[in-house]
Amino acid sequence: MSNFRENCLNAIFLLNLVYMKKLELLAPAGNLKKLEYALAFGADAVYCGLPDFSLRVRINQFNLKTLKQGIELAHKQGKRVYVTTNIFAHNKHLEKLGGHIKQLKKLKPDALIVSDPGVIQLIKKVWPKCEIHLSTQANCTNWQAAKFWFDQGVKRIILGREVTLKEIKEIHKRVPKVELEVFVHGAMCMSYSGRCLLSKYYTNRSANLGDCTQPCRWQFRHFIGEVTRPDDLLEIEEDDRGTYIMNSRDLCLVEYLGELKKAGVVSFKIEGRAKSIYYLANTVKVYREVMD
Image (cartoon, rainbow, N blue to C red):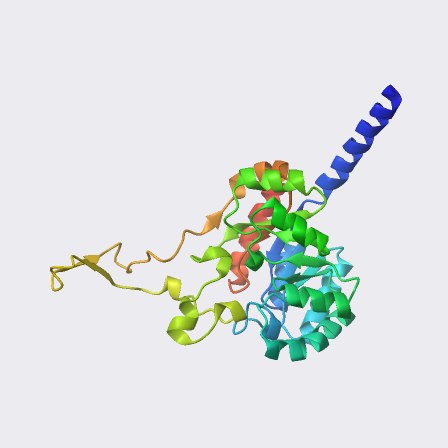
């Protein structure tokens, strides 16, 4: 019995070593050039997508040809590419989505990032062996939801940005086989995991279909008033550039990577497919150095 226990402990130790080696720095790629820079400055993997089915439309410069080049380049370096297919699809999108998945299958990305359960079902039908990562847009914030998605064939969950460190630990403890990915740097949408309606309201461009105009970063003038004094308004002021009370604080968890690793996170994700190459290179380099 003692030998059996010792063998089990050794096996657990080896599995932990394997698990630790899987730690990944995941960077954004808005075009092929940005993909090249992300890899050159230390990213283990990149995420990108094509305009029609990705949550980046106007700022997305990939097409099938350049996406193929990017995937081949990454694979030559032993690195990975995850393709976003994470819109909340309407019926009209389903008509083209099957063909889109078939095209992606030929390019051989390492995984597809998906938020819609209907799209997941379609991927499983068209590309049964596809590795599926659950988008943060799906708002997975508890272990029961993580177990549900894992049972549906999802290998990795990009947790909702509202999840606390304590909750991450419990999710990992309860569902240890599912990989956990978290955003560690970049813009934080004011809405719940990015489900914002402001862009649609102001400009008729839906953030949930990849066309956010980021009205949360516009300059708004806000006034408060007492109901019996409608003409006596007080302006809310913040600084000389305007008031940004709707824009949440940007994320920077570079000091907490060790704690996130211990909690069970295997992939540290940087936000910013729309950011400049300069921003991308510097951010990736800093996180690479800290992780090393």
